[in-house]
Length: 212
Image 1 (spheres, rainbow, N blue to C red):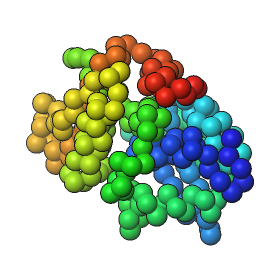
Image 2: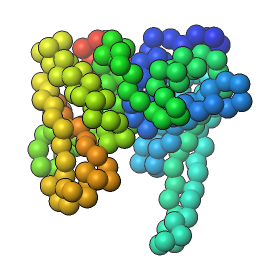
Image 3: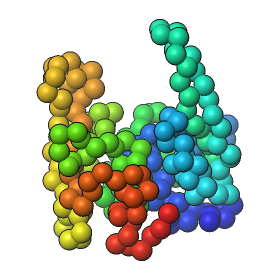
């Protein structure tokens, strides 16, 4: 658990992973706060992450939105942290001119925990194989190459994980996807077959002795 002025190592790794994924750091007055949103199927994951940022996090709450196009109501779970000076360091690293980026020194910042959180935010399993997608279309080609290098390096660190990484475009409407979304990062993890999010985190974190 972090103190009022310092993030723990574990909190820093979770923050790095979720900033590569769906989370945002926004200026709120003088200081910076973390904002996290996930749809209802990831409610448990959202509550887990909020608890990990104790004592900085505010209670999760549900947000509903009606899609005017089809009249359907969509819900998501949201939590944010208090506005904190300690988060300014990460906003300076992960944002340039208001846009989220991949820090050039990201390879020295990540461990298995941040990788697991990144996957939980922006990853999903491929239906045609044992591989997994990581959605990275918001990043530049250069930034995606950095992420590709990091994932390939993970295979050298441990024999428990076998990873092959390549930039991937959907086969259907490839020109449309390339123009609108850019490239996505595809990667394969040997020991994952049909795991729930808790099982995935357990298998990924077990080699370094972390638990959820």
